[in-house]
Image: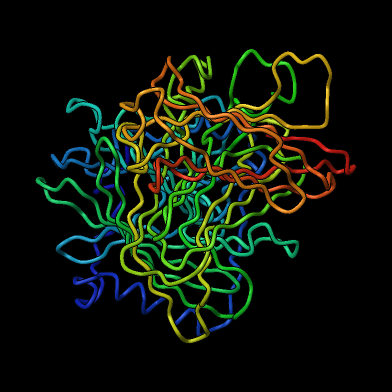
Length: 513
């Protein structure tokens, strides 16, 4: 869908001259002022004709692409706006920054095609309080010069998603996460207002500012979008807390994992795997780690501490169509997302939250950075990072990396209480090594775990190496942490495979992945 034409969207009255140099500092000043005052809960009053829409009815509301912002301006970007309704009742302010100043973009139901919905257009137009947009989409010719593809969308709380060339929407990012995975419940800060800077005809990037608000914090954001094969967003944020305490997660990523090569489907399914991401990758100043995802039977929260974070991401390493066999969802085209801090974020931890889900309609995976020194009231937390949406040329360690984790025994005469894992490593560090190379695997099992057997041998099909482990958990009611790294002499030649095996609700041993 394309966005409104400027003549339809913008008012003619200019704001005072100080806004003509509008930038990040102006948004940060508003965030600081908001934090010094009490939180004002927004009033959401959608007319019944919109609040009663179900998912499919809401999706049938289409923006009139002929009215896209900058459609007739010979600019590389276009913007389309999103209608309120269904779960999107909160209106967000949207403004356009030009050389003439800052102008608001006004909501108008004539910008939309309501399709088969029986919606009273005049009731929408005259709603009180007046309606606004629920978000917006950005379009850019990332796949070919003849068509402007959708490359970025902001809608709902502080959620946004982006795409690079040849990708399909999958995981999402957020501004921040608050108390994710905590029993006290999660708070969802919201982007309440946006400012979009008009690009020049030669620009290949777009600048967007956003103001965040919630009961416990406010924030100012600057997003610099660079659409490409790997679309990159340079993010700058300044966060102010109204109330100290709680768990603040920076640069959160949200994804879905239902089942995969390391976990059977919860019901008969023709597809071998169903997930938007299959693992968490973490780079610290000490090592690279890979945590395969699982769909647990109960909430699972784990973390990886680091004195200095180099990067983390929820990755989709399985890229072959036959690994999914889903012609509609095309999970093989879902992007990975990689967060690379700019500057030193100080000590902290990457936290991974896995939530049980019965189907693929729910996002049940969250990863974010938790600083050891959260902001105090009146003291802003300033962070910068690059967020890239990847398919081709994904971020991988310079070492060998894990390409699959499989579980289960082959044929055995007698069942026992052990668990069997098969981990395949590939990469330039391994492919030229002869089969007789004296590689070894350093394997570690946490408290209560015993490594009964381990075998490491070359995979003649892929040129990589396979590590097979037989593990016994001596305390079956307690989760068991496993780690394994490949070494050649004194040199580490692979990332660290880090796996957590969990018990079931009943306490009987169950391997969910």
